[in-house]
Amino acid sequence: MNPQLSRLHPYPFEKLRQLHKEISPPKDKRPIALSLGEPQHTTPGFIGEELAAHLAALTQYPSTKGSPTLRDTIRNWLIQRFDLPVTSLNAEQHILPLSGTREGLYSIAQCVVDRSQNALVAMPNPFYQIYEGAALLASAEPYYLNAESATGFLPDFESVPKSIWSRCQLLYICTPGNPTGATMSLYALQQLIELAIRHDFIIASDECYSEIYSDESKPPTGLLQAAAAMGNDTYQNCVVFHSLSKRSNAPGLRSGFVAGNASILKNYALYRTYHGCAMPVYCQMASIKAWSNESHVRQNRDLYRQKFRAVAEVLDDVWALEIPPASFYLWPETPICDTEFAQRLYQQENVMVLPGSFLSRPVNQVDPGKNRIRIALVPSLDDCVEAAFRIKNVICSL
Image 1 (tube, helix red, strand yellow):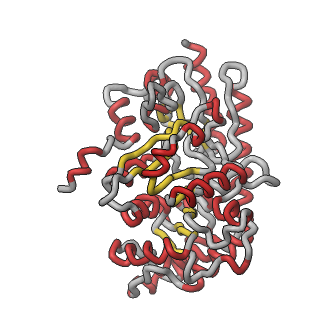
Image 2: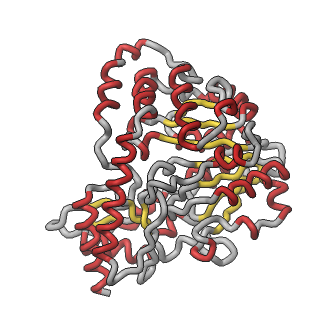
């Protein structure tokens, strides 16, 4: 067995299962799950129609690189969404489809980390646990960058010593952030790119929440956008990951892509040839339709805005909530220990939330997830409002 497997932490939802193991929730209250970031809005009908129309493609082995049409469609979307120079992106060299961003975020580390060196992989703290698992299974040391309220819930890059950057081979960032919803500015991204080029590490930007934001006139900035704006139109040291899971409410489609520097993606394409996660042809056809349509994405954003407003209205007089600029999460402080608060919500109200400490690691005597919870506003508007009233009941009972 791979000896690195013993270094993996239990997944957050396994921890949650253990936390609830001895608890019986009230049977007269139906369960409301705000714990898992799984979109529950209706998947656009045209995605299912396109899947069904191309089931005959089950007889075909898909190409690792995906179809030229899919890559062209993604290229056009990136150029339009992030205002990229038209000549800077080549569908053949700069884009690869993925079986969801989770698969790509894990496998990029296995490809780019040089195990013969004293490798280090940096990541935000709290974080999406795939980053940590990818680092450990690549035999690298994870380095956690605390993201707290004092830093606007963004990683504290300025506190990182040069000795760490000199060992860093890969930096994961998540913008908009999971679980915080914080977004990185153009300037902050450009500072990171300069660091990456100076110290020769790769930035892997997880942007799967980039299409869920509060202000329609201010979409979050992307890493490639920041690179192009500073004249780095070869996207040196940069790769980005996007997905249809959140954007199009299609987590079961397992469709995403990675885009960025041609040299990095050339080697990654070779790795993926052996990795064996090619996207089925019928999924590619449905993905082409999804990346070509923006109306359903605008409607999706509006639904989340409605839920944020409604939940905040219910809880405003008992709980200080900060509405994030993007994502579909709330990341509030808890009035008691985060795990105890989660237990009480489940035991008294049959509401499931994720303790913040399940998404973070203690660093320098600070745990940025402690005494916070992640609330995923993914159920229906009515369920989110009902959950808010139940949460209010627990807060008022303390």
